[in-house]
Image (cartoon, rainbow over all chains, first blue to last red; front, top):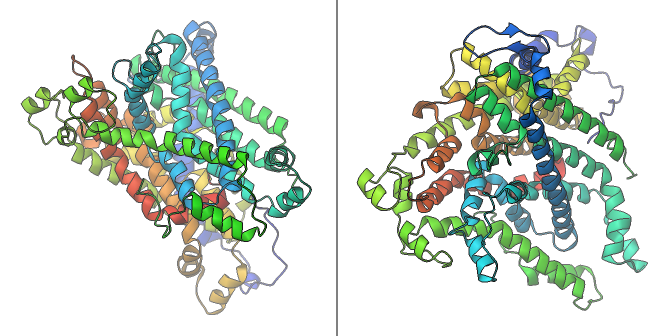
Length: 305
Length: 318
């Protein structure tokens, strides 16, 4: 979060030759601009366009106006997918944010070990696919060590990923395991910006760690926390991989998250128009959430100096 | 996990506390809070690392052994059969006898595919983004700020939104089921990479470049010889994270690749998982495959860990 400070008015050697660097800049910007136009701007516009069409990939897209949106509003699976996704995001972000904050504070106040910071990041190096498969095994109802431990404690085995009520929280927590270290390091970066003098001064005044956390850490970390929250929420809404390898949307649509439903509509039933309409809906939801979060948490402002 | 850092003295509990104690002269008694905090920290480390141990333990067991002793902490009936199955070194008969699916997996092929895609994406994306970032940070041209605003707006579009239309485009280009088709959409830039590197270039003092310019070097030369070397740490961080992201990507390659010729590890792994034999999962083979898929990233990270961890710490990347 740097501020683009205007450089002091020094005369640059070539400034007088006029004209700027137009031609050179064109060369430097060309590849990135090409990528931007072809693989970002154009698909965005095209995605919006496709949402107003019927399109099965084989025959040309046919304009159908608001038909897809009309269908979406009346599609119970769409609404259940949205509900499941929101439930996932709440559990995932809730647990992850609290855990990441705790880890970040521990990493800052307890030890400055770079080794521990490295270890915390290891699950992030795995793919979602790997994390999903590993936890599928650990939580396996028959042989998984997780259930063996639960059984050893005298409880019944829990069909974590095969039960309607357990499946979404389980997937949410698997993804917490993979992402929490990365989130913690981002928050840790924010904590590093808080001057140590503040803690020293508070300690002289006899403040406890608990009090310092609420009076110093939280207020000063707020802008960073807000940005991290916006980023993780957006990422969380796009959950797909873990669902695909663990439950495939089941049991009975209980984990059919929006992105999984969109994928199924496009590649299972070849309804690219309808899938695009749902993508647009997701885009609108995400934009609204980003805007709201930004306003609520006043992400742009800082209390620090 | 020994793969992480090359820190000479492994900082465990005693060394770090003594280090802090020397900073703070009055030696405080060990507080309850501190002990509790260390217990919490240990628990976090265990939850983080135990699954890795469990992967290894399962991969080195036989499937029959796993079924008989599900909670034995060490490999049951030690074997490398799981790895052999994952790498396709076992005959079909052998594999089925040991609880595998017998469906041949050409993991070497997928490994190579993953390396090609991730390398292509990382090298091109970081280089092209750096070029654009230089143009935005240091060159003067008409429409620069407006163009940068356009790039920034791209940050607002969730990657997932562009996947369906991009698939349609890749299909029209005839690149479905090719490695180039998988790499292409992220090969040129991401708004984040451009934004991140531009911020870094802006913070490099102009005097450094001006000295080179006065010496008669052109701006192209300044970019390659002065700015790129100075930005090596953020570029390395960006590069490693891009590589990891690309390596772990599943959704996009799943859309684009249909056959072995373009199948990458993440997709192959999911297919391996779905080739479940009637009798039950081949957990041993599956965990071996998982480890093979994850190991390259662990190695890559461990090589650069020290620079990256501290770099993430002060850039707040992504």
